Structures are given as C-alpha cells and as structure tokens.
Image (spheres, rainbow, N blue to C red):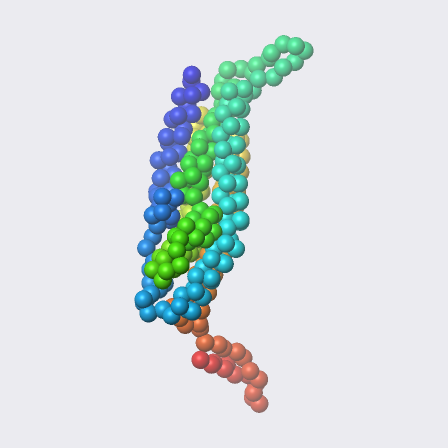
Length: 267
C-alpha cells in the first residue's frame, strides 16, 4: 500500500516538473486529421499548372514515404522502451531487497529496503511520463504520405487537397525534427531527471540518486537525438525546388595573388 502511494506521489511530482517542457509545442499533428495549417508552401495553388502540381505531389509523396519506416520504428521503439521501464521499475519496487538463501527468505532491514525501493519507484514514474509523452505527441512522419493518399479522386480539386495535406505533414515533420536541437527539449530532460534524483536523495540512497540521474539524462538525450531529422532538409528542398525560397548564391573563397592571397566573394 505504501509503495503504491509513494509511486503515485512521485508520478504527480514528476508530471509537474515535466509539464513546461512537454507542453511547449504540443502535438504537431493528430490522428483525427487536424494539423498545423500550411504556412505559405503553396502561395497560389489555383495558378499552378497541371505539370507543376504533379511534380509537387510526387516530391511530397516520395520524401514523406522515404522517412516513414525510421519514424515509425523510432516512435514505437521508444514507446516500448519506456513502457518496459514501467514494468521493470514496478516489479523491482515490489520485490526489492529480498533474497533467498538455503530455502529461507532473508530480508534486509526495513529501513534499507525502504531506501533501496525508492529508485525503482522513480524508474517506474519516469517510464510513465516517457510513455505518455510518446503517445500524446506521436511522430507525424510515421505514416508517410498515407494522409495524402487518403484523399481520393483525380480531379484538380482533389489533387490540390492532397497537395495542401502533404505540405501540412511535411511542415509538421520538419517542426518535430527541430526539437532535436531545441534547448528546451534538453532542458526538460535534465530537469525531469534532476527532480527524480532529488526525490531519491530525500527518500533513498545518494548513490542511487546519482545513478538514476546519470542514466536518465543519458537515455533521454539519446531519445531526443535519435529522432528523425530529415524533415528539415526535405522542407528546405521543397521550398528551393518550387520557388518558395531562392537557393543561396553567395560564395567566398581565398585565392592566391601576386602579393599573397585575397578574399574572393561571388553572388
């Protein structure tokens, strides 16, 4: 009973600590079809020729589908990993510090068992938070271009609708990729694990606190950095190829001269 109460208190405390980081951007795209509106990827859709429209559709489908497998594996792999943390942490918290010897159960003192159990409670709590984040903010690229293909029909109106939907997904994927290097994502990870370490410091063993913080920050950082990153480049390629953004023609180089060297700049 006490273990359950302590687990609930820990989860609640961590949720408060993690809330700012988890709620910065919110879900980028939802399974019900709602998503961010396209921010100018197609400025004048009605003015597109059929050939240009088809070219954009092909680009979007190819790029979104190319990133589908990795995004799906990342999404469900980390979800399963955090869920496993819940199972392991809960099981260890229940059976902690009990050993079997010569057919008889020998348990450590109540105080030592109490302290040793704390880190496992924290592990389970962080697993709950990690799993919740993965499920509430599912990666928008895990379905590839399926959202585009869900819009049926060969009419120009249907193709324009597929274009708008593909642009929305591409923007959402790029936005998700930017979180890999967003300081807020990393600060949230560190803050959550510091909260867990502080809880263990207060109710458990100091050595367990350091171990939990180090392992937690490492795992959280790995989860952030292994997230799909190709969406940023795909969005830039789309904007450049279809006239939304002019490719940079600014170049500089150092060239030899009779007197030494000079900086050459071309536009």
